[in-house]
Image (cartoon, rainbow over all chains, first blue to last red; front, side, top):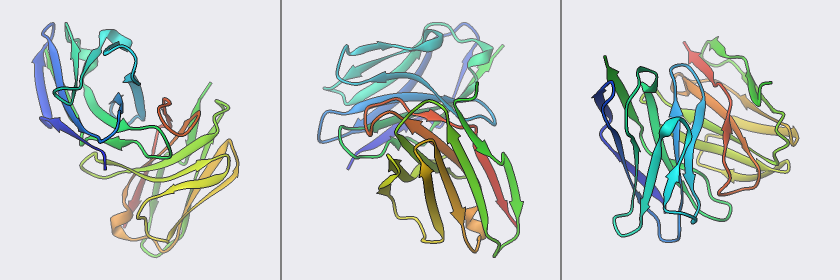
Length: 113
Length: 113
């Protein structure tokens, strides 16, 4: 079975500081990995995805993530946090075939002025 | 243009009632999903339909019955509502079953009193 662990249910950074949200996955087959963002009272929006192409994936709003098979990680980063980045972030994993998207428990990002 | 829409956005009802949530997507996707997000923000797949055929049916009480009249619609009917059904329900769609980006609706917040 596939699973995702997001380290840290809450991360707080200063405006302009580096954002690092951690995600580790478990999968016995090559995974497809995703980061979604959820703003308050809204649905989820895809930030970026890894589907076995380049290991460094760039997404929207200057977010990027690197797939590291040896570490089973897919951490999300952004060089400089903005106030508008405050939201809930979800890492998710799936694989080829009729399998559901499995989400991590989410990390709430707070940005301090 | 709204890609994935859900109605209603809020639903407050009493225990024992029957209610429905509707979902429509105008993206031309062939796969639709229902997710439940609990009070701790944990997201879990409930159902998945591909070309109107039920593909994924996680361990959901049979009080929950999805119906897909066509590829663009996936409705969720809930019988005999219980307090534990209170959650935010998200509809999503994608092209294909795995690896494809899922587009989420804005969610329906169900409160059972």
